[in-house]
Length: 304
Image (cartoon, rainbow, N blue to C red; front, side, top):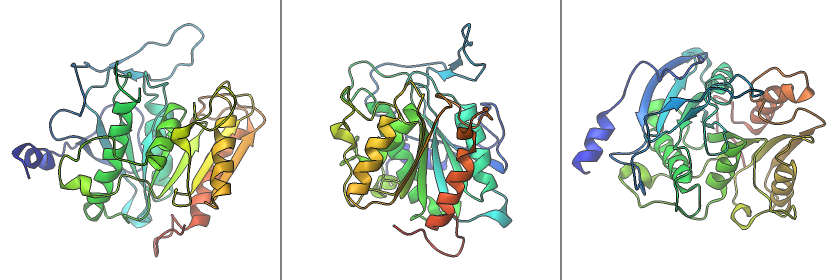
């Protein structure tokens, strides 16, 4: 192991990331994703900052200019732990991170289910000249899954019950992470020996999975080995529900377990907010799906 990797492995920053919102369990640690600089960075980005809401926008926390991606670990109370873990990817159009109602509040909900939550603060905005254009984000997500799996004993989680939940652009990123046919960076250390693919996924109003004709894009084509997925979308979402429907149907074609909820109304970007629409019940439906799949069973692993 390189000196940089040894130093990185030793770095565990206790006490919180200060991003607003609190989880139900204890915020155990903030982990830097990479030993040294992240891959393919051509110039420094940062310092991180919050954007003020524009007239007509919701009053939510919008974090941008992220140059140092991290994982913040939230553990549920010891007596509730199931051994399941979920990586949380907030949305924000690959420009900002909706770090609270699609981030820390999601971690609180997961903790209430006995799930270890790992909040992914991935690099935003998009880096110019990268291919694919969200390369930095894919790299961060793949590294995060490998890191959680390689450190599963330390976290007291089952390496075969590591899922991912993403919202909007984070849902797009979740689809990339689940369906990628390769690792999008050269392995850095022993942590990258662990698989970078989640065991299951929850895609909440995922964006940009289909082309203008409503067809699933080539990079999101599943096969029989793809992980089970749960989808939530609203029919009046400006980011078309066709994304969820198309990927659901493709999974069904390959006999991959999947569940789809398309609500009549709700729009986009509600996250954990209690909006006056039936779509606000999605966390209950998601918990039921995870329970039915065995991911929340403390006595055994989830099934395919």
